[in-house]
Image 1 (tube, helix red, strand yellow):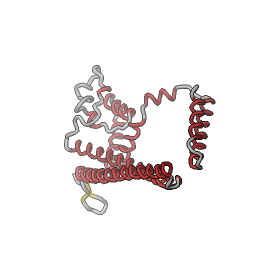
Image 2 (tube, helix red, strand yellow; image 1 turned 90 degrees about the vertical axis):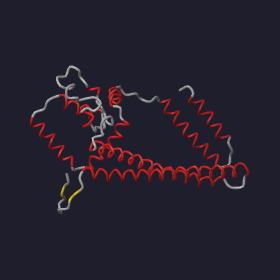
Image 3 (cartoon, one colour; image 1 turned 180 degrees about the vertical axis):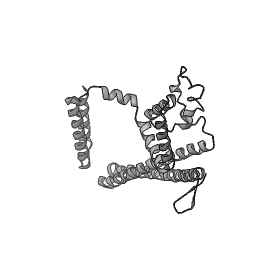
Image 4 (cartoon, helix red, strand yellow; image 1 turned 45 degrees about the vertical axis):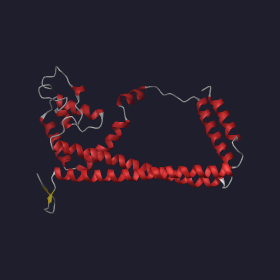
Length: 260
């Protein structure tokens, strides 16, 4: 089915739009993977340059140790930019998977690609087994694009229990409204992947129910002392006092921290 936009032009149908966006996302993945490799090689090169400068400064004394700040600054800057590329690459891969899944549904090749929802199966339910609500190739697998356990549970609840006619009409209106908002559905899918990979609802609930656990004062002091000792050691090293301050501070810090 083709749609007409406000100026009367024929808009692409779902299949054409999904194909176009999938191709764009796949091309973006290829380009970002190339950029990712380039940044990785540059970081390796800068690290090697830093090693050479360190050897020239402390091994032969041909250059000043302050030159080491240049590769350090360059390495940090590259790391920040590389991290942005990695994040963009992850988003592009998720976008590719999102449209690939949509194309699979349009081509009726979705079986085995989604979430079967077998944990919601109830052998005593009056129609769940007869209607293939859960399991491989089930209605749940076809419909479920939830990115959280709570979303999956909500869909399962809707499938397992009848709803009033007014509720059914409201859900159908919501589906019609979302069907034309592809950008919004893509954004929700991408954000949902972050939530799914980083949040364990059971662990989060258990953590929230636990009483507060204050950090012991000795642990706080230990962390502060080690941080200060490390800073003093670095300053002393660049000031030309040799490795002695670093070793002394590290030894004292480790001794102080050992009982905790």
